[in-house]
Image (cartoon, rainbow, N blue to C red; front, top):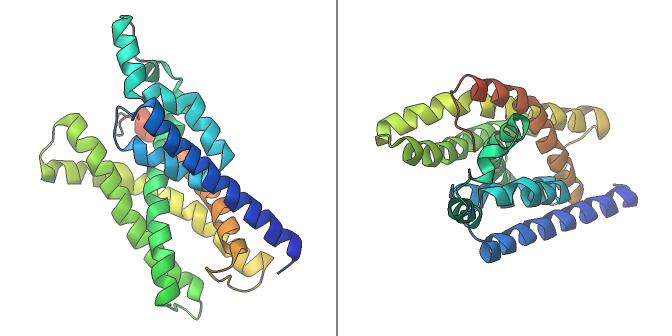
Length: 231
């Protein structure tokens, strides 16, 4: 592995960790989010998006805090989160989906590192089985704990709605992510990268951006049709 790439990887990962810690600190000091799941979504987003995730939180995430909602109520105006433009709402919904995928993928990579699975002669395809299964599990959980309290649904209704809402979005995210990792494996490096290689995690960060890009139009459609709730 070339030395410059390792340097870039460590720099990117360091910035991602620092961005995540900054978001967490701000959530503690400035006040938790009105929608509690966003207290997880924003730090996880910063973990893969780094400074861009941090900027997104500072610019748009703070508008969803309980403090911002209380201030708006005292001033008899709409909460600022409701005034955000539709493309931003789509981006937040996509990040919500991506956070479940990210947590699932992190767990999956740890499992795959300890218990490798080979499919069609390639470890990459085996990892994808772990990735999709756990990303789906965490993605549905994230969506369930958003939809159920918002719509006052029964557990079964909440689960079914979460499945309907998140399956397309999550699958679109994984397609983008898997597509990039296939390029990394077969076109860029010509071999599998190990999970203990910082370059692997740099490529995973890029894969998350690809997942965001492929999932964004699906989330646009879901929000426009009223199938998914705005975050």
